Length: 377
Image (tube, rainbow, N blue to C red; front, side, top):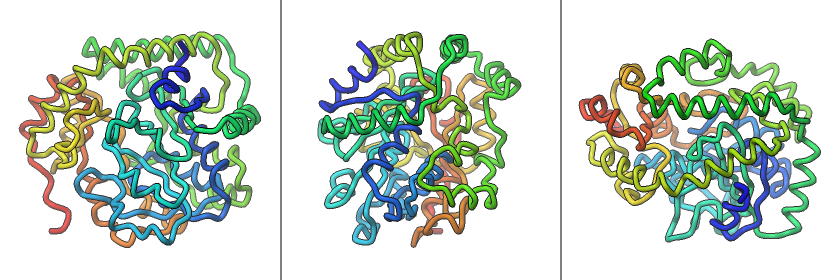
């Protein structure tokens, strides 16, 4: 069964396979929103998400965040002033989809939440579209799936997808699958440090200024003159995944389906890891509300994050998925800033996301970490 069929069964929706989650988000934003609309979104998310919103011709409105889970604070946000909402479901902790989706277009970024549910309903089944990543939980290296209700929307999205796809090359596809397999093996065999060094040496990770890709305001201003076209934004959207618009073939689809099917077997170990990490004094309070969920990462909020990251790598635990600084500070002038950015800055500066599958390796380090001071001191 293909990955898109597995997610169709999970969500009860019509699903379309994509070469990446990021292409799916762009397609969803273009299809369900109108250029010029105001889109409420979290200021703490991956670099490329902001550029996808800009590429779709939307105005990014930064939301206030909840200190409990780092997601949009649905009750503090002024929802009457926006046309649409893009959720994040940060590290698998669910956004308040029922409130955020009432009376406006809701696009769910389910990249971190392929296994998360709300009242028994899977994330990705609430909004106009849910967009999944196959590179996160499933560890398939790349790939995405967009889920919608209506057949007419699915057909339109397929047409729009095909217009943006670039032809694939079999040898590159095989190399990509083998690279992903090697990465998974490195994690299992405690070879994280040499794997990270190799990835950096091969140029598989973009150069960054801290944790963000360089913005280049002049280049971005030029790209904005061509919205809602996507290719002018490739400089930023392709970060760490240059083939995000490349058509995938049978080898990749076989591997993706295999990895998604393996999630069920990993689920008990992931939930057990969540439970171990949730008991730490540094664990985000929102984790306690979801100890039964197989989270992508467990967010800890710690004082000296960089030292902790280095020590975790020495013990075979890769971190990643850090979004610092928030978009307000990363892209001033290109976003409408949050009315209360303090929590976002606190989260971005202190969050340490730990993979629950490797909680046993991480615990000797993270149990000794001091919690971050509260955000309102």
